[in-house]
View 1 (cartoon, rainbow, N blue to C red):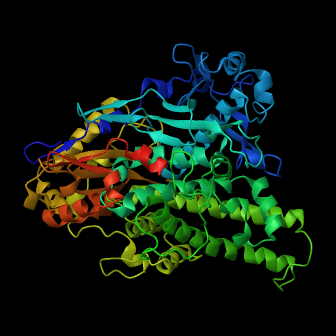
View 2: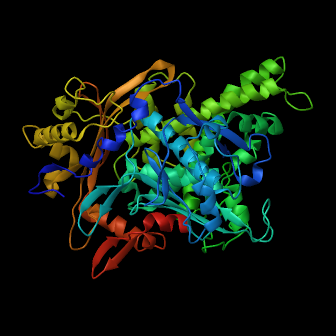
View 3: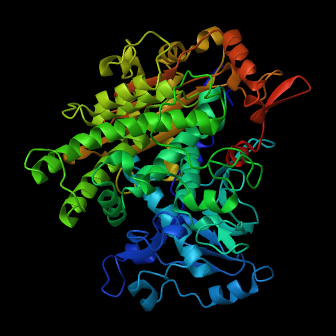
Length: 628
């Protein structure tokens, strides 16, 4: 925390640096080697195991090659970013005997794209979680244009930040029909359970692994990645915050599916080009819902969840409808439907030209199946559109305030980020976003119009006083390119110079920006990240993201967020401020009353608890979110 009203650097910033392990891959350092593959190809379930026999149900993905190693002491298989916990010999003796014979770097394994798909083979289960987690990590890394540090952990008892050596993936740990992200342990726990009597594709009582569901892996990994980029997005200061977490995770799973061309082509053939008829692509976690009793017709599945797992992507849920309520999954589905509506609008326009060509301008397809060539071309355009929407969602995180996210604020972040990278919107893609949000009644609360020039964040009038020359790329010592993590020494120098500048001659401008003067409070720099962000048309955006938060820990509020303010600022490669997303200061009493009002509600009480007159955040918010 801050001292004497000064602006300081959070210890978290100095944990997001290059570690020895980040540059320890000797194979990669050695350069091209004819005996070592450039990529590792692996087979995975593209949807879920029950659809494995369908065309596109199993796909092969590629990741940059790295040697996967075993640790007998920790019982895991690990690479650079991830550690897959293996089944314990005492509880899983037969599985462990198979694992002990596993050769992930063997010539045959690599040549055959890993182990064949299986519902029970522990080698494939490990391969499935490793490959799918690596895929979504790569998606985030490309969209943000930088490395993402997973596994940062905060101990509220000591106030110390630590960093796990690798992020954990645990497929055999818990016997329950759930999967959840555990920030305190820097891991995801994937449950396993016995299938119910009417399960499709499984024998009653057979073992079902949530780690074999593509959507479950992507969904939970997104929670972890979102927490790495925006850790305060799990601090529920109002109803939108956790609903946003859920919606964002669902949207990543939806759009990740579109990257699998054969799967999309098969669905296009069945739907005959109609996007709103894509059955498999229009639902989430099919296996998980069908096997655990948590489908849309069930209200009390394993774990007492009670929330529908198969949530419709296409519908008329309205943000201000009393029927929606505050439950994060249901409220989040409003945001999911809004974004998917925008996707449909853009994708339909891109497909219309192909249909016109195929039908000689009539737009009416003849009876019978679509030609394979047409289905593949439509699938390619859908995949490209989905990738664009996925990137727009992820990039917007760098243009969103550091806490207290709302659905409309996120729309502003999407518009702001896209305008920086794509100044001219020839396809009216941003207009499709705005219209979709308007349709689902996600309205501004501050008198703004649905116009991109109004929604994009404006920089303060005294912007020159907020420029930071020390963030110029000419002065920064990068370890390779700007998207790679800085060394600890460079990060210490850079963040120290930023804090010194903020407390120096420009202190008045900074305190005015954050509303610190009236509150007589200090602030912390909580993120300082450079990036090299690729965009369409060969454009690349270079710059640095700086996040600063002022919290007030009091006897009434141990979190400090009930009287907080913060800003997310984006600088170009010359250290000039180009975007400023700020949580505008309000009288602390008003903010406190709003947050306390939410904290005593049914949903708010899942995140907040009051003990001896002090509001505290519950430590298990992430797990509780998955257990609803």
